[in-house]
Image (tube, rainbow, N blue to C red; front, side):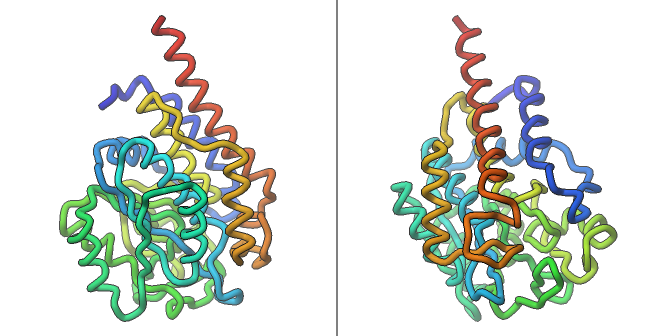
Length: 302
């Protein structure tokens, strides 16, 4: 679909932008390259994409502000490229995704994963929607003992329907997979389990085992999703990222619905302990970098 050299520099810029904050969790030791690019290339070749998101905060009994905003931004961008999108989440983040889908006027269907029905649901989603790609944005992954943990080592298994099965079955069906994570305990982090176990706090306990074809490690998982959107922009020569006002509306509405910051555990428009302004700044930089690249290529073609 595209010549790699045309976009290599921009993908590097995106990776650098989203790498901020990785040292605080030990994930700056991860040595992966080309992951945004490989994810974007696969998404461009896909017709139907399943996005899995939602990370429960046990003490609050609801999902966090990291994950759903990124998933919604990606769904928005994919639909503008003519892709069909299915969003998978659990009851703890359900209302956030429904609010976002309505706000953004998306056609995406939402599938709520339930406990004790995971195997059947995973099979149903794959058989019914026939996805070409399944991607997780900040979704708890199970460790070697089939348990889910918070980044502080708190067992949250009973709050996490096993969406790992979607990725396990995807491999069996030769469906491409990607994941975005920021702590080591998310779906996809099995790809860098050696780093997680060695450098992340309680990494040998919390490390998720499921690997994905592409793994984007970001300071905040939303940033990784936004970087994928930026990559889709430049490879399609089309602006598919919404604006600052919509970014604000999405975050404010899910917070009003009860979403909490995963670090502070507070019902506020911060994400992973970083201010609204800090998170918005990364979004704007990614969007601006992508749009400037498009404008440059358009002007150079005349």
